[in-house]
Amino acid sequence: MSKAYFIGAGPGDPELLTVKGRRLLDSADVVIYAGSLVNPEILKGINAEVYNSASMTLDEITGIILKSVESGKKVARLHTGDTSFYSAISEQIEKLRELNIEYEVIPGVSSAMAGAAILGQELTIPETSQTVIFTRLEGKTPVPETEKLSKLAKHKATMVIFLSAGMIEKVKGELLQGYSENTPVVIIEKATWKEQKVVRGQLKDIVNLVKDSGIKKTALIYVGESLRASSESLGKESKLYHKDFKHGYRK
Image (cartoon, rainbow, N blue to C red; front, side, top):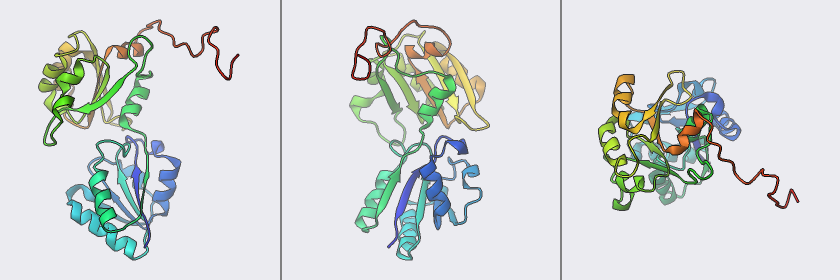
């Protein structure tokens, strides 16, 4: 049998697909992509059987993979962003293991990292925040009690919230359980796509910011004091480049 590759397609911009991802996609015999999320520009020029998984069930997807690899075809399963979170590859991988189908996971550029690049900053600022939380508001998929947004907010770390812009009132209410109403927020819709929107403000205004901009989904919500670094000088420096800091490469 051949092999299946789970490939992170990146946030949207075709140029942010990794070199390895591009090579495997171009050489694939069969491509199954998340049609509602993956930029179709990434598929231009490929010479393969192409399936849009937007309307498929898990069994239908794994059925195509099984039939293809049994025929000696290389399969590229293309997911948006990076495959390590909110990609739903875990249940697909379990099915492939049951069927003894060999697979490999190729990481991609997460929209969370692309968003930070759009803002022109890092998310960890010395003395301000050294922790970044990636999470989501509970929807159809349950969230463990210890990971409720209201409890995570009490850490006051930098937070990137996925899949929650459509429930923005609830997001605000839960975030206020930990953050102050003046905490900086940024909402980025369709990061790196041509249709990209970036909205900045404070937590107290987040509901109106989202509604007035027409943002409904495919958006990330960034929260935390570290976000001030994208628009002002915080004067916080790490020890890494300080003249008195000694390490193995600078003595």
